[in-house]
Image 1 (tube, rainbow, N blue to C red):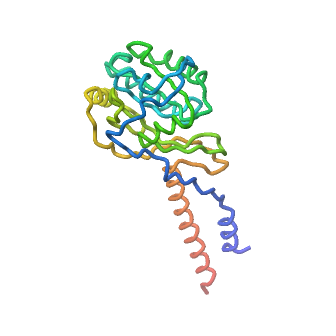
Image 2: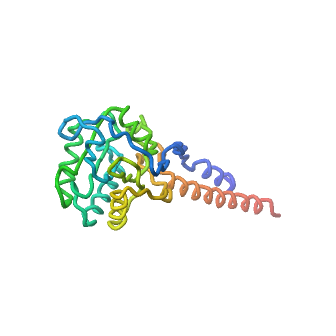
Image 3: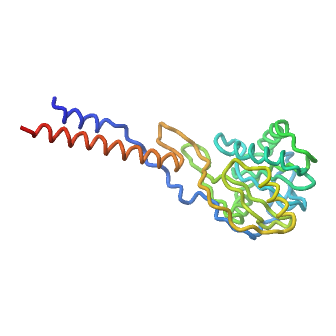
Length: 257
């Protein structure tokens, strides 16, 4: 077998990657100054009926949209924001409220209660327990809040997980969007400044967009985050160039007298 034929076989044997999912619609459309639906109905972690406005209880609020069974980035987002809040010098239940709102209508107050107990035990935030509000609800109510803050997510039936952007929304006591903190790795000073701004009713400019998405990684199906997929595309392109150049060089050598 000639070297050219062998190289062609090796090229054809390179593993094919499945195309990445279209994630162009998974993002935050930032809406500073927008009003959230204060009357949207939810269930608290203890199973009692509440509304978003009642959960906020007249305080500036950190709104975290995710879900409690998430196995990828949601826990990282909440861990980062809780760590930042613990170092902010502010007191939960007095200076601010933390609302963790599940985007999964299948989750229940039991799921919220379990997550709340675990995270309250792990993160010793100064202040009153009333400031921790972990909520679940129906799709209609979740959708109202998501649309108000420009949050775009999608459920992936194959992995049974949600594609959604990473970040938090800071609300004024009256329920206006004061600012966004996107991505992960929140600094205590930034979170503190955002809450103090919100307490005074201040509205910040839109944050720099950060494409950090939360969804399932499955190497057997070729599902990757967009950033990783771009690296794979680049590496694949370089591989093709190298192999193609090698084949071309081999052809020229075979034709040489």
